[in-house]
Length: 299
Image (cartoon, rainbow, N blue to C red; front, side):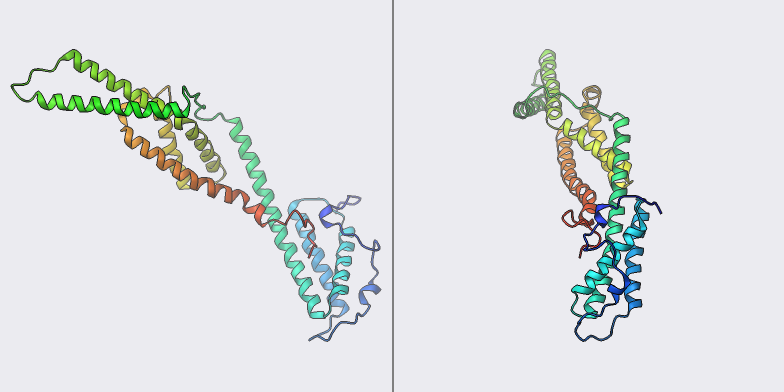
């Protein structure tokens, strides 16, 4: 073991003296009657159990420590419990509970450290590799984008209705033929309305989808899950549709209403994903020792 190393604060306890002699441990105390009497060998056994669990925690965490100082701390703590208990049964119950608590809290600390290391390495890997999509600079505010979206929807609906009615009327002999210029103008209005719809949707949702895509890649890199991989593919498909560079060639492949419904569904899934990811991130912290009582030997 490493000698001359300052003992960590989470194992430091103030005692009246630096060491307690074995005679102090054998001093009989006026305990109440109990089912059995604790012998000196049993008390020494519990001191060794405390020492073994603490050494095991230090070893798992790969932290240097002074075994002699830890041993003295365990002896002092055992004597403190022995002095404060009113019966030997209470003494045995408290000592065994502390042994189990040290083991449990040690596993929690190890789990928390592993999670922090994995998160740090994942963040470094994500930072090193550039994201698939860059954030889009909106051309209008969300309020203006929503108004443009509603107006474009009306223009596209009116254009579709006019073209449909003219095609139906052209089947009758008494109706004149379609005016080519008029039809071309209506189709241009319809196309412009479609582009305005995609631009408004891009202003409203593209950056949110980019952020969600980064979170999904981060989660998938930490641990592969089929549902995360599926959501990532869906989000990437939506980003490809709304991407300003490749969007025009995808406009005719998606129904606008279906696209909006799919985006709304993705954001509902994102709310669930955020909740699950936060629960997973805080799981180790939640089960770790309280910051108000950092000592492993605290009752």
